[in-house]
Image: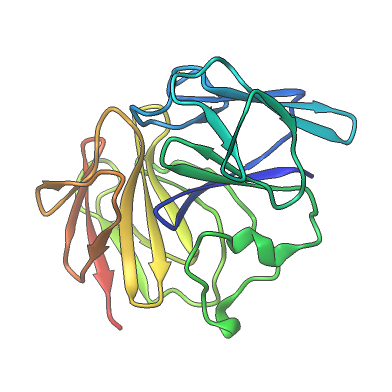
Amino acid sequence: MPKLIVSIDGVVIKEVQLTKDRTTLGRRPYNDVVIDHLAVSGEHAAVLMTGNEVQLEDLNSTNGTYVNSRPIRRQVLRHNDMVEIGKYKIKFLHDAQDASEMRVAAAPAPAAARADAPTPQRRAFDTVLGADFEVAAAPASIRVTSGSAAGREVALVKVVTTIGKAGVAVAAITRRPHGYVVVHVEGAHAPLVNGITVGTTPVDLKHGDVLQLAGTQMEFLHSP
């Protein structure tokens, strides 16, 4: 099944399986793939599927849509094509057997820690959504310290774990060789780390850091 792997600054923030005839990308919350950045138009581009053919169409965006660094109006997408929208890079995958490509743009996990097949999910528990890529162990976790889920601890068992409330505020925590980073993914309310706003540039996380997102406070726990 065709997929889109969305990343920014080398951090994978979401995986989208293409199941519809028309999938829209843009800044507005009603898009199928929301990319919350000022360089992205409200309705920026659309992915169109007809049989086995997948096309990308620019929807008269302000800053344009690029495939493999070339501006396009409408173009058939091939496996491994790189779409660029604003600062975001979107890898197009059309070969479900090529599991190694699922980690494009992400820092590679150790060989022993890689999963055979990514299983993206999005299940909310007040503040925590699903994750995109599995790893074998979870040396870090986040503990909710406020709200109805206070006291709940969630192990970071994925290379990329998204937290937040869809449509309100979503952040991504990514495991890298040197540790963990957090980045703002979408929504009007940016996450805070120790009271400092996190934008689209990844911020390193340290044991004991306090995260705030969508009115919920969490603590990052990591014992290397």
